[in-house]
Image (cartoon, rainbow, N blue to C red):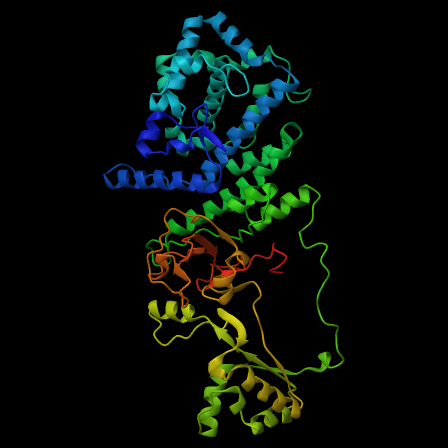
Length: 536
């Protein structure tokens, strides 16, 4: 994704030169890059506000990404027009405008544009503006034509009301004052009216380029929706990126609202991290965009559009057949540790293992007509879960029953042997045992995280620049280090990833916390990746 950003704005926001394309546009290879730029812009704007300037808008990474995508798709539209309708549209434009002004003034406009919106080599001083304009693009087109196309899209950006919060990045005010920019842009409609129409019912190339803005002037989401619905016949495969951009934009808007909207007491709201629906991390080129920051909803919509189905479509169900006893179960649930404490008080002796549960208690349950006992919290729990809770001030807290180290009976309950004793005693009085599991996640320090980190939803880089991971190592295993996002401890953010470092290789990756899409992520869990057959 790419869009224009001026030399002045690059300097103001200290923009990384690696983000710039051959023609000087800022390029977002993924959403991470747009988030880094948004973080820099917000940091500088807030500093300016503290110095007494008016309160600024917070930069929205989703909006930057959407603007970049609209620019990229506009280039694709121009390329399609030149390929299938009018190959001479740009060289003819240079001659047309020169005939109505002068060649010198047109050349001056192009030079001023490239100087104010330089590519990396011009910005570094490795070649002059004139030297760059004299060359050709990788596709063999003169750079003068490429500059004219960029100038057209710059004008469209400056006239787009939805771009207004970011106009300082690509402001064309100086071009208006110093060159024939206004004269040229004021007659773009006249020129394109002389060229063949894009399609019978679509009007000129300029008409098609302006249509999204006219259809939804104040909404980037609306413009993306228009492009998705109307440009697909022209740019084909590239249209699927709109799904990603639309979802990212909406999620970023939610995040900014949650961060700065006043809380119930009138003060600032909690600075929660953005809503994140999964980051399922599919492999292969066709899923790479979603791997960076796509939502499950976007992925499903794109699959449906392609006539594709989920990866599990050819797998057979794996469940046991119904048994005659199932419809007659009368089940009672017991939180295991709580129940053992209650039994200890009732029977006036220390009962802490499963094999110490009195036979008479089981018989009492059976006499009441119960034939199923659901034991909650049987499994070996995460050590890190308890540590995190206590570090956040819950001094008597125990680990969550759903943040698990492993699916084996907890040793402090007596382990597998104690469970087998209880099972046999319960069976003798006609009671079946049940337990639960949460198959979408494990504890952040689970055996699976340590030994099979590739089984979890992860990425190589932190998804948000503001995240930091400088807190204590929560790993009970010397092979890895595990750190949650620092703001968890003071409850000022609700991050979506934690940091995992392999001590042997030095590899650092960021695993997503468990999340069911209805609330914030659970900071003591790690989300399993069901796009992988071995995990399923």
